[in-house]
Length: 117
Ligand SMILES: [Zn+2]
Ligand SMILES: [Zn+2]
Image (cartoon, rainbow, N blue to C red):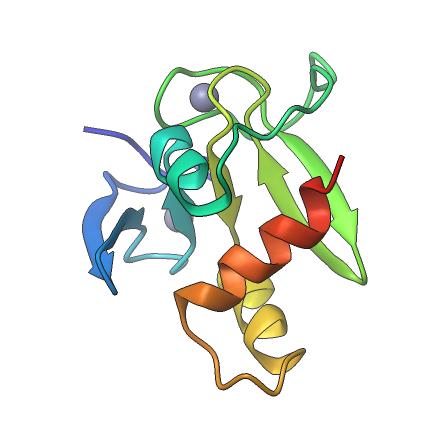
């Protein structure tokens, strides 16, 4: 089972609007596996490799996560599988930064903004 990138416990499956992610009960962060991200935005996010001393590692494959900032919100992306980690606060920021009412489609929207080629 995948573990929280911040060193907490095993992530628990989280299913909302048929998008299957995983969440940490301790920090309430959310992991969106690469396959889910790809399904949501139609492609795998491409990011440069993270610094070797980057603090967080991918729950799926253990690669260092790269932090990417967009409009004041930071998400951590795995250069290997394209999975995305959202801190609880980051998710809240996202929900608060839109008038669309929140929900997974907001994540989708943000990812689209982030990864327009
Ligand atoms: Zn955690
Ligand atoms: Zn990964």
